[in-house]
Length: 125
Image (cartoon, helix red, strand yellow):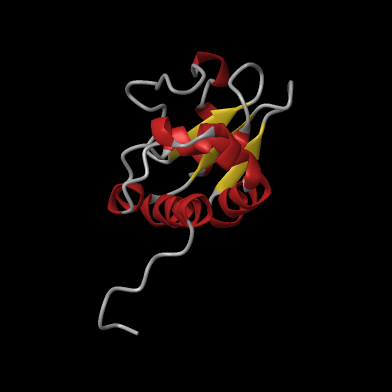
């Protein structure tokens, strides 16, 4: 992953919801700053299609800005805790990287904070 972080050209990454095709590297999740928007939104869009979000029916297009704002601190803390934030030297830009397990963990935490805790299935309580 270290090699990935050094070669990603942040200038070539568009703001969400646009996506880079193909992604700049296997571990890339999202980039923010310098016109790309804030971290929470960028990471949420970067996780679009992730199985953890699909399981909870969480689609970035349907998340209200007020909901993200209400839990922004928790979302950003979860992204930093479970994946690898790499800051740039200019303009407060940064990118988030993670393997499939780290990506899933970030997505699971995002779903938890945006939608609330997972409901307990009947018969499991």
